[in-house]
Length: 129
Image (cartoon, rainbow, N blue to C red; front, side):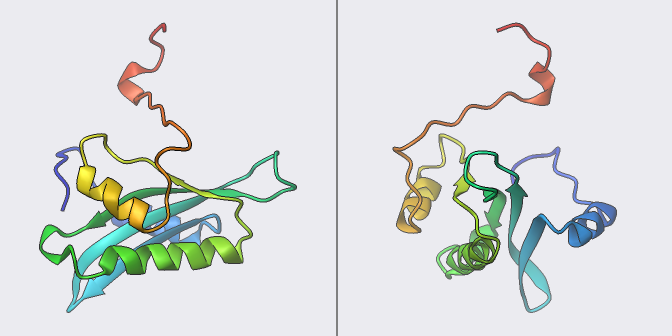
């Protein structure tokens, strides 16, 4: 489903997420096959009177199923969850080269022109800047 040989989903990690009240792993299953996923994590925030903010990760729709509104359905569920948790905002990152995904996110109401994301991967931890 993704072009990353390092991806390794384990049953134990899925089970751990299932009992974590601040995390939701949403899965779209069609005819017994996973066709899309999104992970949403709530983060405590000191800035907005105790409102958490949400970070979305691993929004993935199986290539052959794109254009079938699976991504929209997953984001709709995420938004309902975030509203129920009184989130101040939802954030996500997207690879700079995924232009089609950027259009999708913008069509879903996300703004790519308001903030700028920065990443530092584990392999870079401890490196001087």
